[in-house]
Amino acid sequence: MNIPTNILTMLAGIALTLVSLWYGKNHGLMPVEASSDAALIDGLFDSMMTISMGIFLLVEGVLVICLLKFRRKPGDETDGPAIDGNIPLEIVWTAIPAVIVLVIGVYSFDIYNQMGGFDPEAAGDSAVVQVAMMPGDGATQMIEAQSKHRGHNHMALGIGASPENANHPADLTVDVVGMQYAWIFTYPESGVTAGELHVPVNKDIRINLQAKDVIHAFWLPEFRLKQDVIPGQGTELRFVPTRIGEYPIICAELCGPYHGGMNSRLYVQTQADYDLWLQSQVASQADDNQTVAAANEAPDTRFLAAYAERVGIDNKALKQLHAHHSQVHSL
Image (cartoon, rainbow, N blue to C red; front, side, top):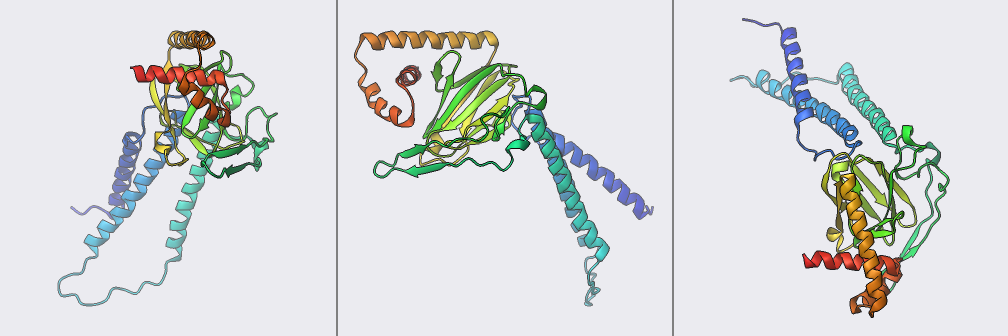
């Protein structure tokens, strides 16, 4: 039975579309979604995977068909027909990628705006930042620069509040400092400082990022968030965690010889568990203060104090971090 070429082409197009759509939703390349913004990013990624699979099957399919249909027949020693350009075909294969790139660009822009990353008033700003290496011990010198956007509703860098929540304060604010080779988390409302990040689930979280020495990158793969942290230039990340669990915090910028060890953990907890953790940290802080007041400082604390002063950590934060470090090693 001879099937018309038009019918075969239509069936092939339907099959190619169905396979591409299925693969775009079932590629399994992304980690679990742990924030409200993750679904937006995954939607964009799924769309790109669908388009990529469609193009891949189309190109490879044409190649296979050409290999089978136009292969040289036994005894045929003639040359193929001379083909010198095809203007309509060149227009088509130029226009299709251009339209795809344009659509993906507009889609990406819309998602970035929904997440709160777009600040038109801050476009083109670049605060003056100078970072220099100190001679001798290899430590870095931090020179603070002033941002031009301290009066904005959200900063130019990073992901701020979504447009509908731009005028609403976050439920919880955490100050994060990146330095070689650790993340330090401070809760301004309670004064707690820790080496790991705890947040309650389904709450609007705002993270203020700063770097004390070199450029770092705060990356939360399960939250689909990654933001460079530049010395002297404040950065903001705002998100709503939607999945209880423990997640890695990774520095995604090569920040020095021990860059691989610069990681921490993010714990998304119920409100009750988060309150218990916060209370335990506050109580631990009080106990540490009493112990320090009654006894001489530990030798290692005095040793670390010299470096803490250099990177901008006060004694209170240092004692909390030292207590946390001791607890981890006692487990």
